Image (tube, rainbow, N blue to C red; front, top):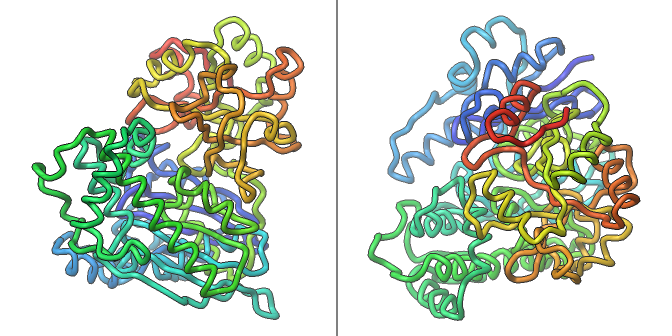
Length: 497
């Protein structure tokens, strides 16, 4: 059986995805999990060793190198790369990797790779596809109408686009940098901080709209925010700045989604690009579309899967996000339960790792969500700011009893939207200051986290656990057994494998 290797690398969060000629996703992972360098933009040789036994006949790249260089010119940067596809891949892959193999090389536009990652992993026959990120070549927002032809091939008709420098993602990153956080990395911290904003956030948002934004409805800006803001601009509290940028971003995302619905006539939405990770903004989309799909890795790393999908042309077989490095053995349900009962907090590293930035039960730090001090204890372990919230993972069939979901997000299996917690006093460890939670619902499947939740529910009457990624702030998630042992030794938390 032959395979297509999709690659996204060179900017940030390098990744590869491998699909076979039947459309099955065989492997997908992030370079950082192997190199141990957060947001590693390259392709780790160790990651490629995990797929060395597969017959690869096609390599698909997620963008066009020559157009990427045009973008560098347009943005005033001079970080030029090779102009040809083969030259670019030779820069990114280990020396001689391509030369040793007879493979077909293909590449696709950046935003189309995002769109394919979204649509071709969905179960929709047609959909509006929205892509919003910082910058992909020259596109910053794209709307496609995606369908299948009579041979089952995915077809994309772009119906609207926005070009650099008008960028929702760059706007959010500029404010993230302005409040002292790391752009292109800490945007999720900005999102969490926004819940602590005072009423002044509306004053700040109004000022930003007047001085930075020409038209909120089309995300058109008055200046290029790629270069950031003057440090003396907006002398407000970081929480109010975060609240303002979140408010304006939500307005822009919702306007673009409404435009997509009107232009395509679709009630199905597929959404990709880095901005699709903003689960607070995603909540309202559940009222705008009947069905939604955000692939669990909608950012640039996930575009590696999109490139492979475009080469394959047809719908992929999507089962779940457990696609990475495999740790052999049964899911350690009993060991996890024992540790949760005694110490309330435990790590797990079992089975295939998650593809995407959020742990879903195979590389997770788990805890009893009912303890008053659990949130502070877990934040201390992870060396994060004390205000940072945590997510609950819950049995899907009872989730409505504990959380108030928007209609389109009742099956929130990948933590892609928030929901209001109905009993915050019972579960303080998984409720944010505004009463919301970024819920992960687990269906009746054969996953390890499902088995653990079922046993935990029988034992305690609590159908949920706190779930966060098994890593320390600024470091990649645990990937293999060695990482798990090191985590346990360094941070004093038992990690079951």
